[in-house]
Amino acid sequence: MSVIYILLCISIIVAIGFFIAFITAVKRGQFDDSYTPSVRMLFEDELVKEQPKPSIKIKKSN
Image (cartoon, rainbow, N blue to C red; front, side, top):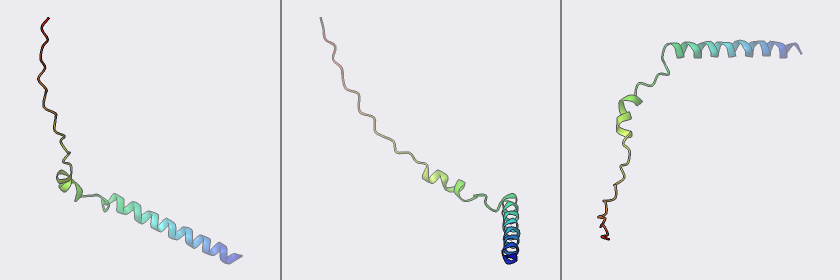
């Protein structure tokens, strides 16, 4: 039974270590995306729908 407590303590320590490493990497900007903004203009083209030509309306004379 004491082995379970030891393994539980070790796993909590490892989890805290990974969490601290993650927070440190986020603060240093490792996960910042510097590539996407430079190519965003290449992929933001919207499809322009052709507007129908206006039809000629004829006035009815009374």
